[in-house]
Figure 1: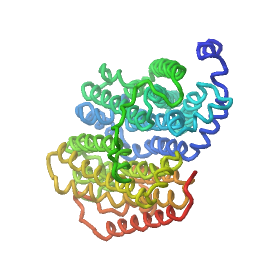
Figure 2: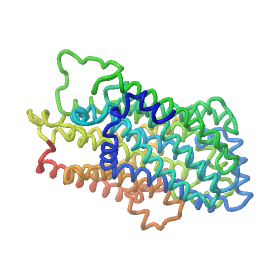
Figure 3: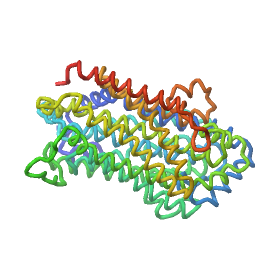
Figure 4: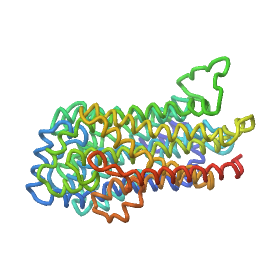
Length: 534
């Protein structure tokens, strides 16, 4: 489709007037979020080859790994099949699915933030009263997502080029493709729904379905040839076979899906009024039943809590089911055994695997607590908090409702994770629950940092994502890179006892809990004293 044809079909260039200005504005607003998400994803990918060289240094080690994957359907479902034993192909196997999923999450957040979020807050109506075309906001949101994915693709291509330039470029373009498929999917859903939260939730649900289809397909075959795998964009990514057969033609699937979805999103955007949606919203009760600020906070966040809870429980079931196969995968590989023990403590390999994966779930739960705390910032900047606080509701009582859900929800997620692990593994319910709940104080510290930033420096509140991203990176990549313990100790998770298998140490748990309380108190003092955003 030529540019002239595209302009004609979208109503001419006037429909896109102001796109450049909106794009610059979007990138300025996301100057923290996009670099953090891109950096975390890029470092996760680029740190993997050195880790793999340590774990599988010899040809025999790599051959044994491929044999174990060919006979272990559960591990293929979790990570995917491997198509060659060179370090480029092993890197694409080990992190490809997760790098693609992370790119998809970044894309959907960016697109919804600059489309439906703007309409829901009323800012888009104000902008559209000026020289802004009807489809300019959607175009700016998609271009912002494209910038984020392109930056990630460039970093991956440059970082992995030494393992094969063609493979590195193909792998990077595959991840870019996954990101853009879900960017355009989010653009469609943003036209269908009236709520930004619902748009994010539905797009995330589509991503979860894509992961499930790929996992089901990969568990059934050893070469990614299942029809279920081909129904998922994450399956397309692995079937590019980067650094192995280099199936560049698979990129045509990403191009076609992105083009079709973008056309659908543009068509829908031109047929509705600002602030409206194609899916009707259900009317509320004639009389309100929310008796407190806490009840309102629960009403606003219950969908998020439910979605995260289901995801954590299912992840626990999956990881629990893999526990018995962990020893088979590691086998006699001394380096792999040492890495698991470094992440999970010097205990039996099964306990070390449980401790390391439970620790990973704790790191991900830190993202939930930051998102939940920053809901306060969203309510304030969208002017929804102002009329509430103008009534007989104090700032502390208003904040307490959201913080109870944030910190209580984090504890609930880890409890459900423990139940999921126990259900999947079928053993050690008590020790596994204890290991999961031990993560809670460290998660609370990350949430407390978000409260502190919001209370004292509301314009810098989104920097809490940077803190959570840095902690995730240290905990995920640090042990694999054999980073010094002093660097690992920057993260609050580095001070927790390694359970199950290790000895319980109450001192760091109590210190982290006290630190979280102190940071929250300082943030609430700042919130009480400063002016609210108007």
